Amino acid sequence: MQTWLFISLLLLAIIIELIFVPKFLVAQRPGICIKSFCFKMICATMFVATGFLCYRYSGNTSEFAKHMLIGLCLGWVGDVFLHIKPKKEFFFAIGFCFFFSSHILYLIAFSKASKQYLQQSKAATIISIALIAIVIFGSYLYIKFKKKMKMNLLTAPLCFGYGLVLVPMMVNAFMFSVQYIAAGYPNAIWGGICLTLGGISFYLSDFTIAFLMFNEADKGNIPLKNFNIGTYFFAQTMLALSILFIGG
Picture 1: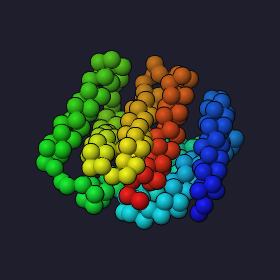
Picture 2: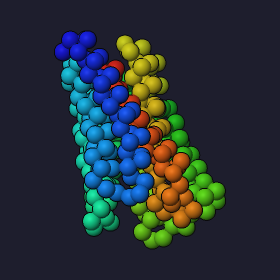
Picture 3: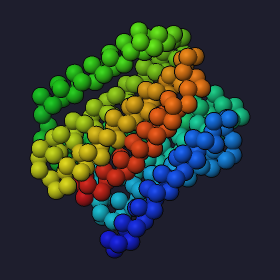
Picture 4: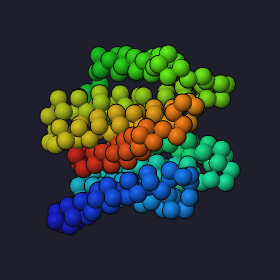
């Protein structure tokens, strides 16, 4: 693929997403509908398209790139199921499983890249475990004492279980980025920025969705909803862009 064509298509995908994310936010305010579903899937298709464009242009056939692409596709399918209104609880559970799986694929991608491009460091592993524990504990304290959310036998295991893949995904994205940049690979800084921003934004998005779903005080909070959706699509786009810079 020629550079001018790649840049043109990439910019087109990003511009389309920038146009339709606000349209989706407005369309879904009264409730889930066909219009909001269409706008949402246009946005989801654009972050998958971004990943494939980066994969195709860079010639990046690494295990990192392949697993990241699969993770993006799983997120796309998850978006479909989360937006189905009939039997909402059932389809939400399916969508939840797809997003859970996408985070696992991202974790596998980081693990594959670490083994291929970095020397395994015990110190880095210890730091990662410590950061994961700190973030999970800090998130729990915020939910418990700041938000005063009441968890039941269903929501508590759901949030905790999802956090056990979400937080490691974010922390490992950051830790891999730091080590990859330190190793001096070409375009490592750009790749590290994309991965770090993607991981942090995904955490923030999924952290806030817990408030929107399970905290009565935040249900219907439009600014929080806008933040949740905005950070989600930004995160997926950043993760997709990382394929262009890491492992190529």
